[in-house]
Image (cartoon, rainbow, N blue to C red; front, side, top):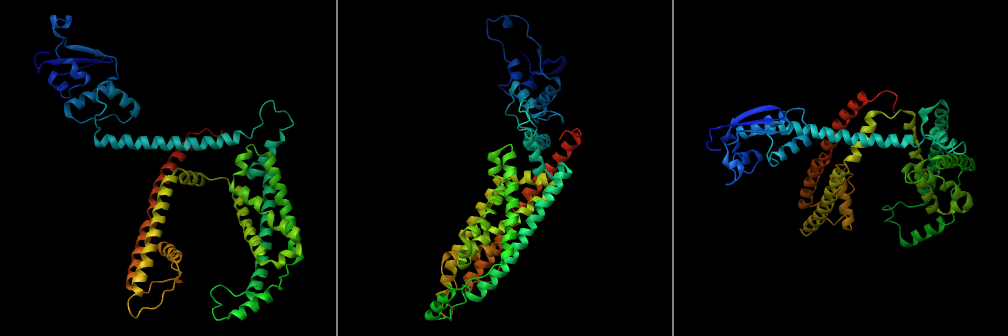
Length: 441
């Protein structure tokens, strides 16, 4: 190529492009630049006339944007191009490192994000589909195990049939009955412990002999639980145990069943009434055992979560669960920041108060260790402020003001991330629902 003003004809995929040699020499080292380099001496190309036309079997539409990059130094792309196709085409022409123009980069990045969101939501929906397809009877299993999928659907999917709705309603009534029994027992325990035991932090005025005498008197006290409450709770436990056993033998995935938090709660709910039946009257003479069993009985509340089975799982609820599941990295980062703030401001509050106590005229400390300061930091960062612990010195009050401010600012960090991601996934889920043929899922 002798003159830079000479023209060059490029036939790409049947479409002819005509440009100057000086244009294609804008980026040395690229494929088009090499077309303008002189051939090696002694080669057949050096002896004949210069070649002015070249053919490339490539995408003619994308090449117009490539040639435009040589002319304007700005790389654009069509609206409907795939990112992988564009990257492959740029790599062929030796422009793999060419930066996209900001306008096209935003369009391509937004479309790529939507594609990733769609694939993520598709994987989530396919996982649920695989779980439901697992319930279908497999070919060749015979009538011996054909009842298991039917029983699992009956117990796990209340919307599947009228019998499933009735069975779920009966289970809910038993759960409500167990809660009523639990609340009734708490009244008996509260009356007993409030009458016979001194609460923590309120027995400072009682002497050592009086406390020892009171402890000796309490050792002989028992609280009487109504027998009919135990029998009613036993009836509820029998229903829960039967239902749990039926769900366990019909579940298609036993490991996943045992790892479910709700199923573990159902298992622990069976222990309190069984322990009381085995121990007998001794449970009424052991306050700690009664309190422990009462704490386990609070798991009855989790059984009401199964009320959601009456409602068809809404799209928004499924999107919310998927949003939380896909945002675990952001949630972990937020928790690490929160823990770091607790440790930092807790230590700062401790030494701020100690420095303030060294000033004449200050009161005594009203906390005994650093764990109390960490507790104060938690309730201050969350802007709860119970008031059981409060700063007395000027340094402590300044620390409290900064802690509360930082807590309000930190609390809103995670909300925009979850909100934006929820909006994206919800838009993808709506689009997929419109594209999905009716009756498949």
